[in-house]
Length: 422
Image 1 (cartoon, rainbow, N blue to C red):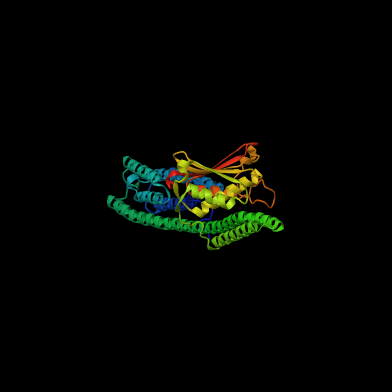
Image 2 (image 1 turned 45 degrees about the vertical axis):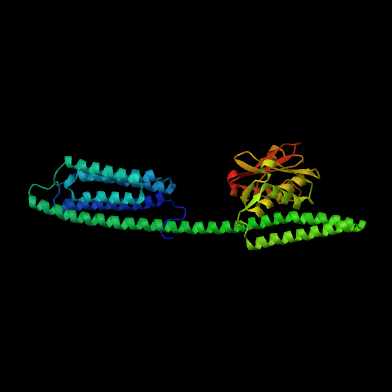
């Protein structure tokens, strides 16, 4: 990107002040040149000391602006202050060189036009008010250009009209050139921001793919664990010659293999985020989860009768996966003791709660629960994604995940949904 364009990290105030500094250098040089030319060619008696003192103030403040740019300490009010100072300096220059009769009062429009481009409306209208007040103050000063005595009034009027033509040309050139340059610089900045957003979106899509893969891997852990348990029971049944148990274990393994296939198909299709909600009762959700999880541990259902048959519109498969993750964590923590799956309502929300009889969690562990990849399980037995993904789903549905735990008293995890889903 060349010198006329903003760097990617430039904000609009920095871009605008950079161009304003260039405008002010050009203005200072032009003002000095016009003063000297007018004095020599148009026989004007001008107070050079006052005029050049004002130009010196403009140059010194421009050096201060350069330092602000170097430090990148630029705010919109900084721009407004500099432009207000320029209006005051222009008023001083006009006052000492003809007042309201000076044809270069057109230059007020340059400041107003620039303000309309680079400042918010409140600052712009403030600058308009200041310009009107300053221009109005010139009418109380000297009327007419400070010409030498031998210049006729007609010549003075002709001089004024020609000066108006020159002032109009200067104002128009300044407005068109610098507004166009600022517009192009801002367009270049917007283009770079658009490219940055596109890069972020690509990164987000890659992160979503990683989350999808991690979620599928976490979901596969449950049926694979069930298959491992069933395989152990099948081996024991073969030793005993118990054909009934063998048939049950084989059917369970086949069911879990079909479930693994469904999870992999879902991951390949990528349709989980777009799963259509359906009307489902809390009782059917809890029973489905308990039925598929019983080989992993003992599960007791304790649903409030008043809400057990209450229906909610939910993405059933996603919610069941989330609840299975909670139940599996509870079964692992309970070490064979029963896990309670309950449900109820408090009027404003519905909830399903999983309570274990494990050792509970210390406050420092509880504070980190739900962070991705944080787990207290042994290496290779957990990915630390179950609570993270379940909480993400609850938030997506407008609910939340409440976790309570105390050392020696187990842990309860409540999957809360807003009542509007019912």
